[in-house]
View (cartoon, helix red, strand yellow):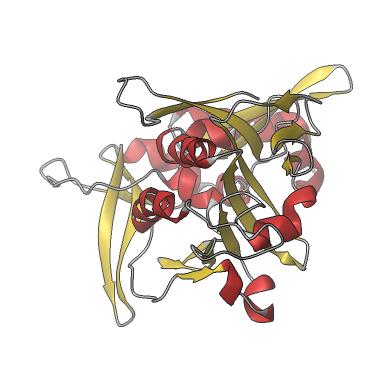
Length: 308
């Protein structure tokens, strides 16, 4: 079972996810030198074939330990891939750390997001701190179209989501697009809003696999599916390498209109696991088109689904 422990240190408090066992026999496979080595290598997704090559041993021996680790809940199957006419299965450790507890230990739960989500957010979250700048469009007229951004309020929901992974000690965590300078441009960024109202989104707009076509009604164009989305309640969620510094990442949440940006944020907050699966046309690309819905009829987008 997954539990979360509060770690206290001189740097402050952090919540750490731990895979908790009450049956020591499930950890027996880790007492083997090879079992432990394979387990540590699976901190990142790998298939048995690749592991066997790296370890210089027969694939069947690696499969033995993979099966043992999987049986005891220490790793999980992440995805499959076609290779040379066969299906290769990729595995990853089910948790970054684990613990053994006696049967009479009880815990009070802490509400926190799953560690799988934290892994993808790792470029943006570092040691319980936000390692990125959230960039929102200025509410004042600015840019070529003299637009006033209205997407900033959507960032509140995203901030609450990110807060589950951080201590909240670093302030401020945001900048208006008109305040962004070279240092910020070369770092990790979270961009809120489309290219009309957010000049940093405009700067990188065409670098995203799914982008907003400013010259054609701000339609959303996917280079992956070759589709164009014209509805005002469609949006984009994308993570790419920062074109100004490939060692850093950019997370962009934007829509054709305000409703689309809201849909993008709702999709990330409520369906992050689905976002991690990648685009339906290329699951190695973390770029998804989304559509928002007003399910309760109050005039506000409250649900979102991925279109691709």
